[in-house]
Image (tube, helix red, strand yellow):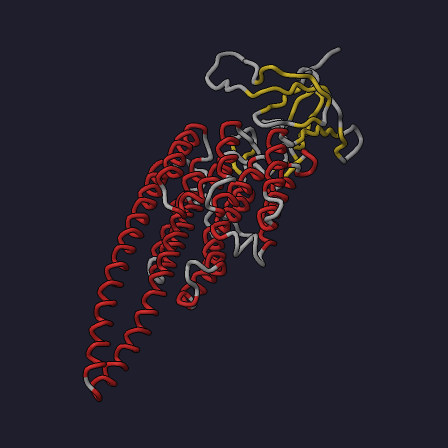
Length: 428
């Protein structure tokens, strides 16, 4: 409701929840991730305005603070193309991976030393009566404390994995605003897919989908097709969902055949088959008349609402078995506010009437061309076809009025519902 508003009352409420119940909300639990996501959505594309909240977050429990900080920073700089933040996220992924490997080595060393200590305690206990009983009590106490310590270390490791997952998605979220940033993000994601840890790898398919929402690209379809058969089922699940988001509302023939093949391949796995059916439903969204792309006005603007919905669903997909594949399948409804029609309808106010009525007129639809800086008035589309409105716009297409001398469009970009009026200077 308050996405991108930085509403003070909502911010204070969520911060109070995290402060009062931070110890009860470990970063790997769905409830804590939802609270952190809610805080992040308040600062969608707000940039530096989130700095004060980021300072407050540092006072939380270490693992929760790390996760919450990454989420808030990601949402604050989403769709801004900030290169420094992308570099910061890449550095964070590397740091978290080295910390995880260092922690594993330390755990192995602790296990060996504790094993030797337990063996010495048992030898002492067996050698002498009363002292043996005392040493037995001490060893049981140390055993329970070591179990608690291992549990905390395990939760800390899971928290770092969650932060690593969000950091990978952050690269795509920050870079999706413009073409150069998207191509750079593609290269970074390829490296993460090859050399990243388990948590980072399972975020890569969703990051690809964020860069191409309702825009299936052939090269990426091949990559995601391979990932749907990955040995790690979490990566395969995310790749299947990514295929659905990438082709949402496009009726893409090749993508439809891929999903049909996947439904046959995973016919005996009900969990994976459920995800395939979800992806098929998204592909044929509104029978091809709707889209969930966050871009508006020929990719010059980004909708905060659509971006918040997509980012929210992606961030909660770090543990699909707990969220969409578990009891929280209703989280898929997060996509609903992002759905919008992808057709162009022309409306005109008739003389003597107050209401706008549909006015079918002739228009040209073709691939958009960048005409910035060109002299004169060059045509903004190429390879166009002539249709009568209402007309559907595909990915990267633009609509222009065929008879611009007779009608004047009141919208700078012909998209969605366009109000037109008669040109008073036009003569037959």
